[in-house]
Length: 333
Image (cartoon, rainbow, N blue to C red; front, top):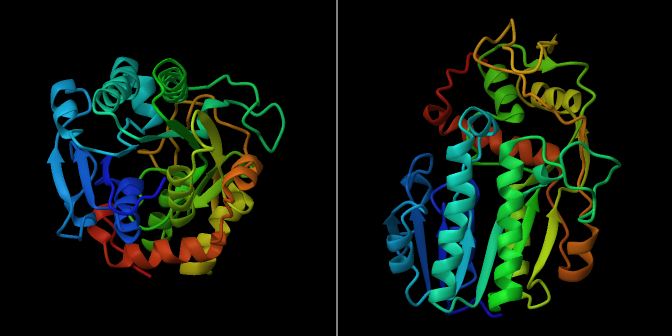
């Protein structure tokens, strides 16, 4: 479908990925862009275009969600509970936000005759890799409540397509990174530590492999899926253009900020804190390898990630230098 002139609503539009989508839909000449966000983690600082309509609301508020969807053509559903530990500690909250909230958004889209529905899922639906890279038909056994709730959202999207004809597409992201990323994941932990003159803490031997996809490439996948009718009722992996060990990630950050620093290795038990960084716990069910096979979206939608990992990390660091308060950084290097 053509985006130009269409009205787009983005749930979680003030967040990391959502705010970049706002910018891109405006570039694609959408007629109107609406941000629907409860601002629990999002920020109006990320919404620089004054033409954007901002609705403060929660996806658990079905009535408000339905009212916000009036005359909307395209929905990009990115509002979610993203923290894995939160889902472990408060599974009911994770369930309500990621499953009940998604159903509310789907119902509102159906009632208002939305023409396209994009759902932000996660490669976390796979759980421990049986083999890599992991294609869309890889066995699905999520390790955490977060992955379970994201997988349930996918299934509801497919059901609404098959049962009601709502054109839905689910995107299973790798680890999306770049400017505006929230603090708390491994790359951000490493960047903050090194900027503050401290060594990054690596759990285990650091040989765990991860799939990083730069924010602009993830946004490209969204736009390609929005424009294509072939994507209706489909699920796609959205990975980066290469894979990196945790050691590689730490060394990339160190080389870009302060090459005199060396990483520190720690091996706490799952769920326990690092002895070097007490506010950081090791995830239960840590994934040994997380590598997505993005060949399907490349074949069907012509997706091709463009940003190399080192370049993407450099851009994130440059952004952080101008936004230190967001991560409460005090760089000493």
